[in-house]
Each structure stands twice: as structure tokens, then as C-alpha cells.
Amino acid sequence: MSLELISLESIKEFAHQYGYWAIFLGILLESLGIPLPGETVTLVGGFLAGSNELSYWWVLAVAITGAVIGGTCGYWIGRYGGWTFLLQIGKIFRISEVRLLGIKEQFSQNAAKAVFFGRFFALLRVFAAPLAGIADMPFGRFFWYNLAGASAWASVMVTLAFFAGKIISLEQLVSWVSQFAIAALLILIALIVIPLWWESRQVKRAAGE
Image (cartoon, rainbow, N blue to C red; front, side, top):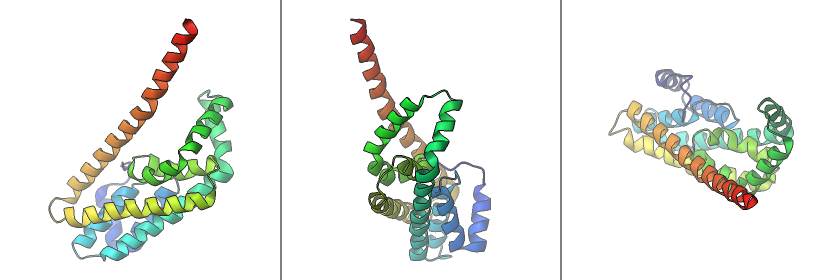
């Protein structure tokens, strides 16, 4: 999902003007944990490569590089300041530190999957790296999953835009990819929330007996 704080036309104009730097910075900033439309920037880069305005391999290289560097910076931000920030958010929403510790432990157990597959999910792509830092995921382990996830995600997005852009409009492509990312996120949330709800219900039922 891209938060439409920046229009597609503005992104295209920025990419036309600054080329590979626009793609690199857009993805880097999103991977840092800033909710910018990095996915749309990547699709625009692939689309421009498909129309021979940019090089496919350079777009892919800067997309991967931006994602890896941004994710790494996001990890260290989460590692050194994320937990304190999360505790402050918890106070605002009246979530106890004990509950936050439980969530942190649960994420820690699935951090590698979140870092790799999170690239393909709306919002999770923005927050996976900082959350991995908060969860104290070993940096060496994070680095390789971050690199693998960034490479897989960038390859899919750039290649999809490179070929699909020859058949459909960029606007339609961005819309379809965004809808898929949102749907995937909703399914992921359901897969997490429903078992937790069912477990809580079973515990309450057992306690009532």
C-alpha cells in the first residue's frame, strides 16, 4: 500500500527529473520506517525501464540497495530507541508493559519471517525492520533476511512493472498492486487475530467451567 500523500504524477515527475536517485531515496526512506510510497516508486522505476527511459538492471540495483540500507537504518533506530517509544505509545493507548513484552516476544519468534515476507505486505514493509530492532533480533541474522527480502521484493516489483507496463497503464498497475498488498495484509491480520481470539475464548470457557 502506498499512502497517497504524494500523487502518482508527482512521483513520475520526480523520477523523470532525478532518475535512479529518486528510486533509491524513495525506497530508502520507506524502509527507514517513514510511510512513503516506496512500492509505487519501485513500480514507476520498473515502468520507466520498460519504456527504455531507465536501465532495468540499474533500477533493480538501486531498489535493492535502497531497501537494504533503509531497512538496516530502521533496524538500528528500533534497536536503540524503539522500545522507549513503544512504551510511550502503550501509555497513550493504555497497553501495559507486560502486554507489550508479550507482543515483543511473539514478534521475536517470527522476526525472520516478518523481515523477509514483510516486504510484500502493506505497512509491515514500513515497520518490520524497526520492530526487528525492538525485538533484539541479532543483526547478522537480520542483515541476511533483510537482503534476501529486499532482493526478492525488488525483483518482483521491478520485473512486474517492466513487463506489465507494456500492456496496461501505470495507474492501473499501481492500483492493482496496492489492492493486493492491502488484501494480503488483511488476510495476515486475520490469520494472527482469529487464533488468538479463539485461544482466549477457550481459556475463558475453561475458567468458567
